[in-house]
Length: 241
Length: 241
DNA sequence: TAGTGGTCTAGACCACAAT
DNA sequence: TTGTGGTCTAGACCACTAG
Image (tube, rainbow over all chains, first blue to last red; front, side, top):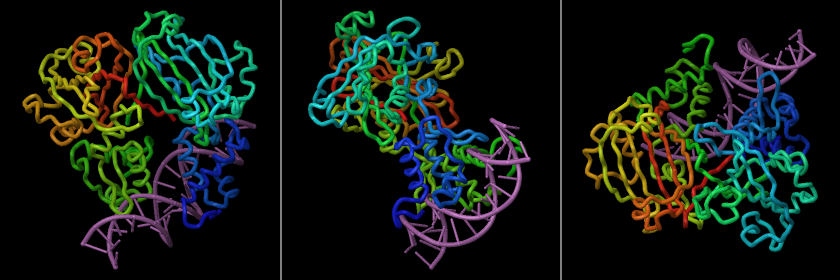
């Protein structure tokens, strides 16, 4: 090893090399990584240094470690989606994955705001999905999802009915895009006529707006998701520490 | 060491011992801890094991480490408050601490809901503080803070004007209560007449409700804080990863 | 210069999972 | 039984801070 003489620590370089392998698809989500000792031999560092790199990756939820089994590349299982990327919880404290009803999918030019948030060239093509998500049988979330057509080619060729509830799993399996991080901006807004109709509330009644920008493993923004939630029976949970 | 034979790992026991010292006030926020080697001698474990314990504490923001200087008990500096416990950000991406104008402070019996959320006996005494917080000179947040009178004795003896902007610093210095973790529940609501007047918005206009339960080092809930925010020019930021 | 945390190594032993 | 990650140790060297 000892790639760069006087810069980042070894374990950090090892970590970057492992991420690189995942980005390149050498190791895919769900795959078992080589053992710590094996990786140490491959990279020419001690097992302890590999361990430190994997510890960091595990703390960032990019790999999962299981004593006796090995270290696995993190995959967007339903559990992980619910735990990390879905924060709407019932007033009684129960959190469950909503069902989805797709309302439409279109391909169009990106709006100026979208080119900024997704770092796209002007007039780049995007694909928009609109859907309504229900909890306990009732519509609760009106959602618009915008992704670059370049990163998700032919996504709009898929029949609407074939879109899975868990889109991040689809991104992973069909487009080699792993969502690893997201930033959400929340605010309260008044329901538009469209949202009011979809969610079965009065026009103008307060809705929880959630604007999410989701990033891939390399930190590139790849999805813009705008949700309007009826928070009469639900809340958004955020843990600070 | 080797306190408990076959249970938690050594570094975890060391971690608990260090937390215990902080809770007991042997080491206070801002204090410099003994060095790793010294702690290792004191507890009868290797320096590496102490390091692991401190690494965990640092990842939980309970201690701060500075190369060449030492390890310090985390304190509620303005920066830390802004970074960890204040998530309202201007539409232009700038985050700054709001100013506060106190509206009142009362001592009363806890409501049923408060006894549940703060795990208090029925009819326990609480102290409530109401205040309006401003950003860039304009009122943005109407806030109600409820704390158990038992944990914050004579808080209501303080003149309203003496209440600092950063309450968590006051908790720490005057009452030996360190806030280390908080859970927030967010939803959209319609402005009440009171909130509308305080925030200068129309009655019924959408406000961002934030219900926070804050915990001390031992995980005991010690503060209930309900904020109503005008999110026309601001948003609540949440980072998922 | 002395003391601190940060990195890296090497090796031992344990707990767990699969075969 | 074998191989994995988890814990613990001991020691070396580096980078930063302060007197």
